[in-house]
Length: 389
Image 1 (cartoon, rainbow, N blue to C red):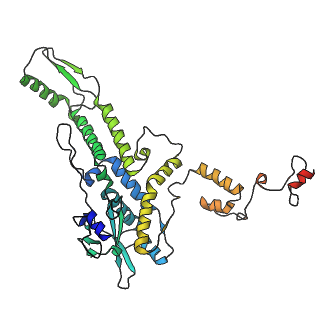
Image 2 (image 1 turned 180 degrees about the vertical axis):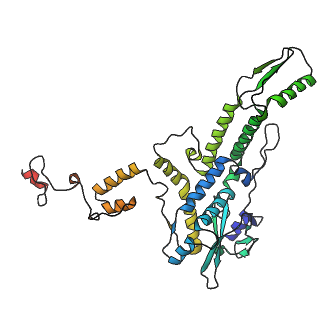
Image 3 (image 1 turned 60 degrees about the horizontal axis):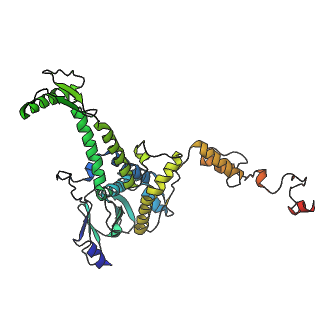
């Protein structure tokens, strides 16, 4: 097994920084290499990774072991449990790997959980005894000393950054944003101008006219200035505008980011191309297509390193609106599935006297009235009495 791992990692080390190959523009110029900090400057990417990490952090981890529960409720004296989980999952989403140090006491019990800095941890597979982690802050760490939250891993050991794996799609979004900003700065976001001179002027004269126009009539500072021409020069609008193309490209890029992370585009702010029956349905798409996978990864790593898999209550993510909740409660109470007090507790209402007894609608029971043949269907009469009648 270890030999196979070493073949996968022939250079012996894994780094929390991933690389991305160069893509070329049509003219042969290389597209700038995508870096994770640059990708976070794209609003759709930032929204996606903060949404997932925030939701993973706000869902409580419940343990049967009271000591583990205490550790995860208050992992250390400097950072809250929410922030600890959010930081680790955020790193995994952006860089492919997020780490927490399991700081144990001399007796082996966990003293605290602490975050490890981005870029400070590498995986060393060159050790014959097995892979170890190397930290610039803590030296060599055994796997039992590290909670390693990872994105998709080709070998199961080192996560791949989703942003690097789909760098072209993210780069399209970044370049579109840059093009939009440049168009606004140049005053060309709406229409392009065509300047026609009645004479056959040379290249130097054409450049001079162009330079004067750009200096005096483009950019935010020149917005609204009147255009004065001479020598029978004509200024026309160029048919077609750059704005629709830029808007289409921006919408496409948002949808691509949604595909990368498994988030419905509507949850990233896209207002076109998606229609959903309800917010609850949208939340369930997000939960089933994205969030549960990160939660299961996190719970599995905790079970592997700490010996107990936490229970994670996901109801908070898909809690329906008050109207849908009341309808479901009424159905559950009438069917004898919930008591009234259980339903009231669900919506944070105080208990009522007699609310702990199950009730059942008469039309769902076996007695309590007369059949259409006039037979009393109360207790003591069986359906066979109908045939005797």
